[in-house]
Length: 291
Image 1 (cartoon, rainbow, N blue to C red):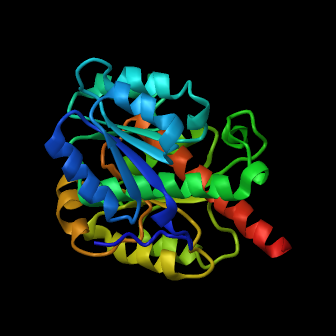
Image 2 (image 1 turned 30 degrees about the vertical axis):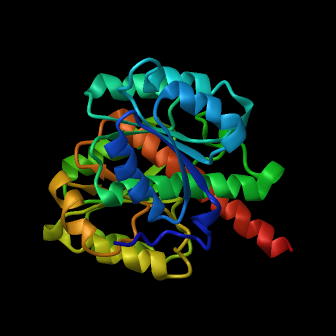
């Protein structure tokens, strides 16, 4: 399994703090994270994790929610008060329901994943967040401010979405427009591929993985391999069955994955994360041209 996303970055220098009170789950997720080439340190509960941060200085925290004593929500809140955690993403894992997602974001988590996540979903999510962390560290004071993606900003990100399902296109583009983005919908992969030949390119692409409408995986690979579009992040909408089976069988050019029925919070979080990646990668390319 491989995720074609790297943008030339080496994640071997990244450190992930994995927090879970279940020793089996710690070993399970540690093995998954190590496939990215990251250094992994572990903690068996929230209190231990918070105490470890000043010395370990992780680049990302992957933490279970349900733990005795200080649970994942409380631990995330405490972590975000530490100066060493500035810019460090926290991803919470749980088998709890919808309320857990809302509580995760309220606690300051960057991401939320249902347990057990598929291999490709977990690795894509962590890769994207670690790439953002790496770019922010590389650019330092030259990194664009987060406010650039706020609704009040003059910068209006462009998001393209391709799907053969009209109701899905309309619902997601409407949500994107409510967030202040410029959204353009395509009825299928062929029309999107044709538009990508132009000089005007989007900041993020959303593809609907629907075998009846064409091979979205192959399109994402082509987007990733072409020099003009290699830097454009891709969010792929996938049925759970395909996410846990078909997409694990071969490399895929998507940067992130989301179920076919995403709610407003999911769309907002994933697209904003990928827009942050897009903006940082653009700033990095500009900086390198100036050298």
